[in-house]
Image (cartoon, rainbow, N blue to C red; front, side):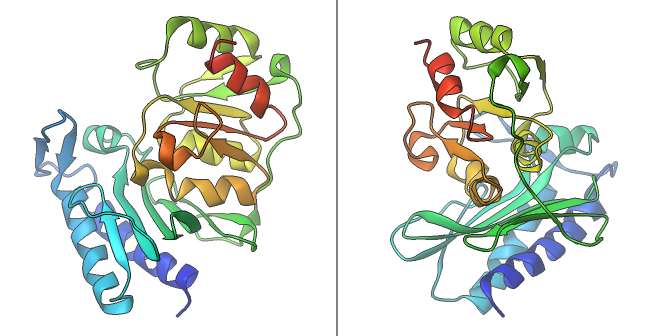
Length: 253
């Protein structure tokens, strides 16, 4: 089984587990040391994927949000069992399992599966970016051709962590802004429905699966300083045409 096929199989298993616990009255939610919530579903999904990878790819390393690990040289799987846990625990259907394979630190496979939305996005470097709706025929993702900030649509998660001048400058420069949030903002850029998203604070597992889906669709995803997003631990994602203009706005140049 190739790596992309395995990632899809892992996503299928994750979907079954997460949907079985979604909106259940007995869902157990606790608070992590960083004051963010974690549910028994987050933990169950990550445990299941770790167990599957231990069998299917025993020589690969793994890093996940709930049980840690590190990404070094060679092959590393990066997992966010439920991206959007705050939505998940409140019954909001905007959440997804993020699964990536990185080789020497660069994500080469990414699968983003949002079963409550009936959507899945995936990419493998050199093979294009794709999505399916309700398990239907794959549709190729392509970013928009919007070339001016004044015509652009911006999505974000929240305004926490933004410098006020950067946030206000970017919001006022674009045509419209909406808080679709989390993984979905980036996937909407890949689809060409949104042109820009920016997040000031992210972790490795929040970004690794998104990056190949965006770049294989023709978009750009970097840190706010223009460097590698996975190193900078923040992200600006655009259709590529707008990238330098957006970077200048978030850096308040």
